[in-house]
Length: 74
Image (cartoon, rainbow, N blue to C red; front, side, top):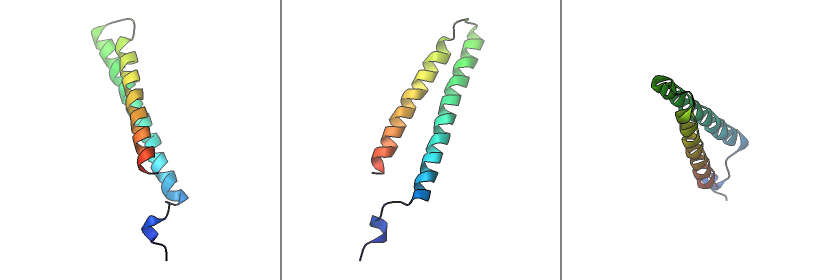
């Protein structure tokens, strides 16, 4: 008899997990853009240096998080 905990997760659990990951991606990137925009506005620079830097840092964190989450659940 097969152990129920050894089964692969069903489609509903996968959908919920990846929907949560998508929401986390949007939130992280939004916070990075918002913080960069506000910092550039506060300093008064015309070129959005911090907006670009914080956006790239947020993308790097997101890629690391996606790789970590998808490898752990295989």
